Length: 351
Image 1 (cartoon, rainbow, N blue to C red):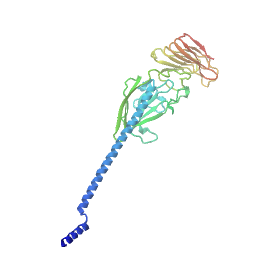
Image 2: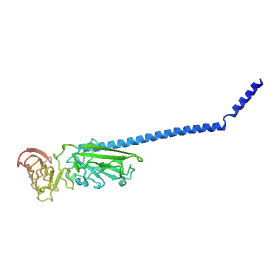
Image 3: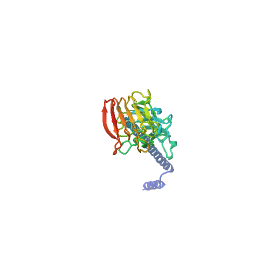
Image 4: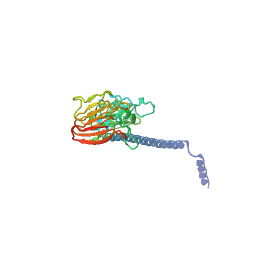
C-alpha cells in the first residue's frame, strides 16, 4: 500500500513538471527548419514557374514576329536588303540607312514597300516602358481588319507611311540580323533575337521565299504617277519636267533588259517613247484639269505595255507585243477599252 502511494506521488510530480526547456527548444528548431525547407521549396517552384513563363512569352513573341515577317515575304515579289534600292523617304520617320535599316519588301506595284528597321527605345516620344534597348519597326502599307493592304498609290494622294512597332526586347547584340547576301532576291534568311527579363534571351533563324510570279504587276485603272518624289519598286521611273510639250524617252543603256519602265507625263501634250521592256506610259493631266487639253503621243515599242491617255485627243501606239489601253470618259475617268496583241503601230485616239 505504501509503495502504491509513492508511485502515485511521483507520477503527479512528473505531470505537473511538463516539458523541459531543452525539449521546447528542440521542437521549435525542428519546426523552424521544416518551415525553412518548405518556404525554400515554394520559392524554387515559383522561380521555376516564372522562368518557364518568361521563356514561353519570349518564344511566343518570337513566333508571332517571325510568322508575320514570313507571311509578308510570301506575299511580296522581291526582297531588298540594300538601302540603296529603297526610297526611305516613303516613310514619315527618318530611317538611318547604315545603322537602322534591315530590309524592305516590294509587295505590289501599286503599294509602297514595307520597310523593316531597328531603332532605340530611347527615341520613343511617348516615354513608355519597353523591354530591351531597341525595338523592331515596320513602315509601309497599312493592313485592315480583314488582312488586306491599304494606302495604295493613287497619284498625288499618296502619303508617306507611318512606322509601327512590331516587337520590343531587342538590344545591341540581340537584334534582327539579315543573313541574305544578295541586295535583291526572292528569298529572305534572317536571325531574330529577343531579350526577356534579366539576362534571358531567345534566338532563332528562319528562311522564307517571296512569290515566284507577280500577282499585281500593272495597274488596271489606277495611275502610278505621283507629283511627289516617290519611287515605284520594280520600275525604272522617268517623269516629265514641266507642263510644256516634251519628248520623254528612256536614256540609251539606262535600263536593264528585264527592268520595267514607268514614264509619267504632265499633261502638256508630251511625246512619250517606251522601251523594249514592259512599259507603263501615262500622258498625265495639267494641274487644275481645266481645258484646253493638249494631245499626247504615246509609243509603247516592244514588250507588254500599258498606255494611259489623258483628257486630250491622245494617240496611243502599242507597237509589238501586247497593249492595254485606257481612255477618258465623262462618267468614269479610266475605261479599259481593248487589248491589242501583236499589232504594230496600233493607233487609238481618245476623245
